[in-house]
Image 1: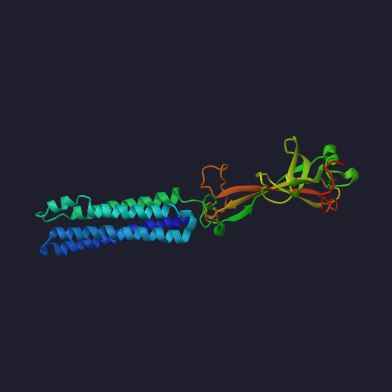
Image 2: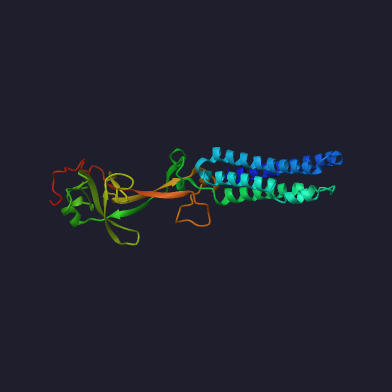
Length: 304
């Protein structure tokens, strides 16, 4: 969509500018021989030649703001303001004295039309550069962000839960019973004048290294930007319990579509337009069915 929009914009600017140029050449050819003031004619031709492509460029940027919203909320208004400045400069100041100086010269067509050619080339380059290099992906925008972004998840990673006597002895309950203790437990802690549930577990990663982790109950990030965790008692009997991490990303659907549906993640992927920002890992501790204590009593001490 973005590439199509870019080329549509370039095509519109070139078409409008070319048609305006041909019309003005025809006007000069017909009106110049009988003109009482050639300078006035050339000045009006110059103004028209500059105005039409400028209006087309401004109109295209306004349409882009309506269509793309926050993605161009900075670059499009800046482009519009620059176009207005360039129009007034090229129409009313650029070599205007030279145009008056050639009052007796019968043909000053080049002086009248050359600024519009330069403006058109500038607008074409501006559209190509701004819409390919400076269009913001929504994870990095703030205006209209909540209405447009989407959240997606990708393939999860899994580590095995490992038994830990230390966890068993220092949690208010463990997420299993007796000999089937799995190395995961829960406890409460006072935080901000309120009790919050935390989970603690030991896991072995793919390289064989043991890790002991603690996380607040829930999904997303806690107050210290650490991943929260939840416990699910959904592992069939005889199956090893495990910890699952599912990456959750904030994405811009438009830029994902431009990348053929593939994510290009900030600070992770290269040689592509960034379209996704990692939000958090959804951490799920999977334990045997029926082994989870429904709630943690905040009146119980942490140590058994």
